[in-house]
Image (cartoon, rainbow, N blue to C red; front, side, top):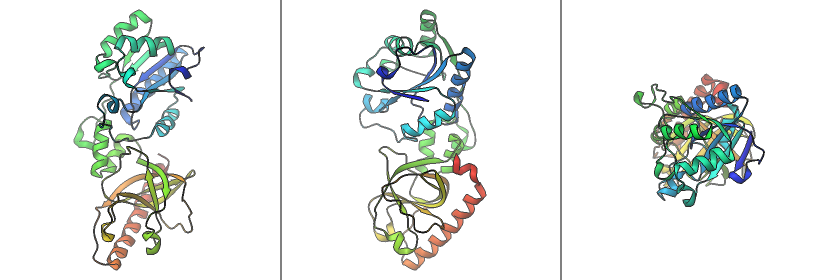
Length: 321
């Protein structure tokens, strides 16, 4: 899959495209329907499929300070889109100037002049252009002028997650913030992932016999609620069953909120400085303050036992999702 940072990276001889536009944070199951349809339509038309997204998130430019927690970093979204068969990903720098483009100018600049759109695939509530004035009706009307068709896909899946409401990125963020990683997984179609570089912490886990990878997460990461979880620690292509702690280590009067993953039954790992990923499978318990170290150790042993059982029961599918 080709990756372009800005319109100037699009090859001058780029042919006709089937395009879909959106933030696509998380690339959840609803997003997968739209992107999958764009890929399918591109193959039918003998064209290339292109996803257009933005960096930073448009809300941060339109309303500074309102950047939502991110369900997936751009490189992770690119990996997921490539798995769906997308031919090219165009990440547009979302600046104040860009936010001022009218819907018509957006269509001419991005869809027509740069990508030579043959078709555009979107959800029914798609909005674009200055003050989100453009909608699918306007997009369709302009398609008559610029020779592209518009395919509107119903992306609103529902399930148990969120009490039966339509799946969305905002719902997924809420479930993650509440610690409902099982619900988030239903929407995403895979476990929620947190990434970052392993840094040196207080090393209490090592002293207690449970050395953990202290993950310095990427900016704006959607981090699950404080507590203990079962999941996986991904290191250089290997998925290791893990017990994961999110919180401030109240037993030791900690103040910094951390994400720490203990690779179950692994000895001698040296992960400092490595970029790792942590997948959250299941919530085990809330964060607690223990009166004694022995009480903490007893609970940690139980956490590891339960995490091992849950990961083993889930099998390899979760580790590769």
